[in-house]
Image (tube, rainbow, N blue to C red; front, side, top):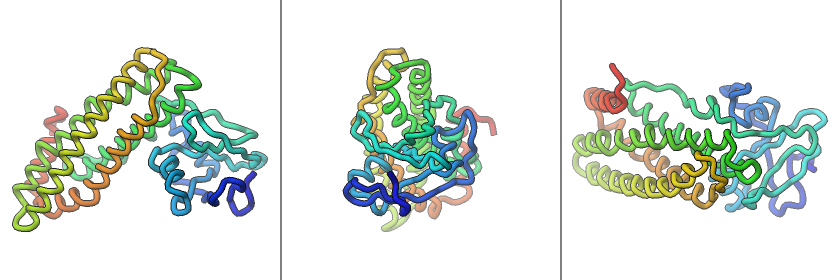
Length: 280
């Protein structure tokens, strides 16, 4: 039972929750599985007070905490999933969350276009994060439901994304963005750019290797095999991508915006469009 301060007793270190209602999210039958919880007033963990392993479960793994706080449904209990990860669900008025393979709210990141290539690259990162969330939902879904039609569709969607858009994103950077930055950088800045690009390229290789391992399992699921999705494999893939995105958005992209002029950015955008066979 939750106290008035929003803390669950008997769980070691205090776990405090705060109410968040993101205004940009829309509730509905094709919405993100937790959006209806959001709109009704759900609880989200405050990261700063989590012990490291619980932050890893809740934040790094992108596992959604579902606690519905509507009138008459505040009698809560704690459970543990098959992975050992903490879960919080409603005892009364429990709402079943399915895979929602037509997950338009998660898959549709803020719009960008090829006239703004840096924003387009950032949008790709947001879509990658959405796919990782789908992977975590799928890993949680399979033990109970098996590789049913929804799980097969979800696995197929993730494979299709990383086989096409994910590959294009890597090529955008390695074939066009990184060389343009190296050409534009001078002096000490060129040394920094070279080091960052070497790191990012190495991370691309690590992510690709992790993806090939993950893809083998997803392909079996997509064909209806009752195969579980190892959370260790999902964690490695998503954590590699997350740390890679942090390097690019924290260091490489800001440098690119400083180094690349209007003409260089226009050429980058044109190359990205050509790669996707988009007519300008």
